[in-house]
Amino acid sequence: MTGWSRASRVTPGGERCKNDRQVLDTALGAIEAAGLCRKSFVVAVGGGAVLDTVGFAASVAHRGIRLVRLPTTTLSQCDSGVGVKNSVNAFGKKNWIGSFAVPWAVINDESFLTTLSDRDWCCGFSEVVKVGLIKDADLFEQVASRCAAIVGRQLAAAVPLLNRSALAHMRHITAGGDPFERARARPLDFGHWSAHKLEQMTDFRLRHGEAVAIGIALDVVYCAMTGCLDWQTVERVLECLGELGFDLYDPVLRDSDTLLRGLEEFRQHLGGELTLPLIEGIGQQIEVHEMDEATILDAVEFLANASERRAIG
Image (tube, rainbow, N blue to C red; front, side, top):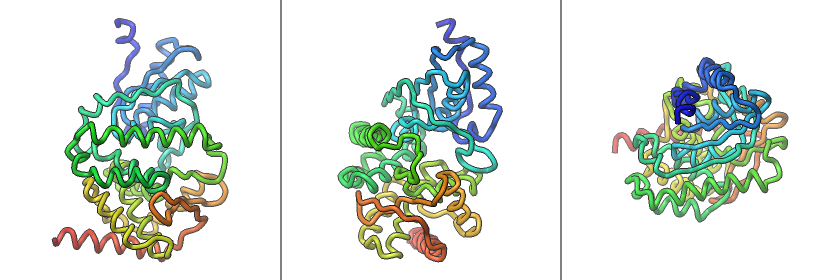
């Protein structure tokens, strides 16, 4: 235990650790100071941003040191902690510097979840909703029927849903045929083109899960406005997200020029042609290669008006 104590480092959590290059340098310095080699192990304990940053350090030190992840948040246990991506932010953009590296192991321990604030507890469930909408209609129904239990932090109701989302990510990575995203699409990024931009636009005041909830809301309204999704389904999705405690509008959405730049930044991040996942029903994903900007702004207006009605009510 003495050796472990000397080798351990404490880092800031949240998106600030991906925005501050000094955190990455500290992680790399700790690896060097400990004399780790390519057959050593780096154990990262924390939420998704910490796992991203430390994972990137491990992936580039000696061209790759074995990484063990212990995700501590709902979001990292159901989504980001399970994958093969590592990154930090740069130039005001999410995940601009990064790598693909398969972790040696991922250990989800539900006892970590009892340490979360209510805000961080809820954040992961927007990602669970996302997986349900694009891949697993029954998962969405399970979330929608358990909103009160989830908000009440009942582990017996919530943890199986987190695990089911994690398994969906794992199946996509191991059996989807494109674990390192060499093809044109990222089907698990429904709602993310605007979410990534919203985080930057709010100076990361919005947590990732909160931005994803708004991104999902924006995209499902857009789907209805373009005729590929019925409004009854839209209302069900918005109701579910609202009952989970998410606000579905932020005033920065009014900065239309900046918001719409998120489409081009997303295309650059994908490489080549813009390809976005949308839905035509719960569990029914489709791909599009463009979005109509005027309709996006109409969807923003819809969310603004809905938010105002809720505030008045």
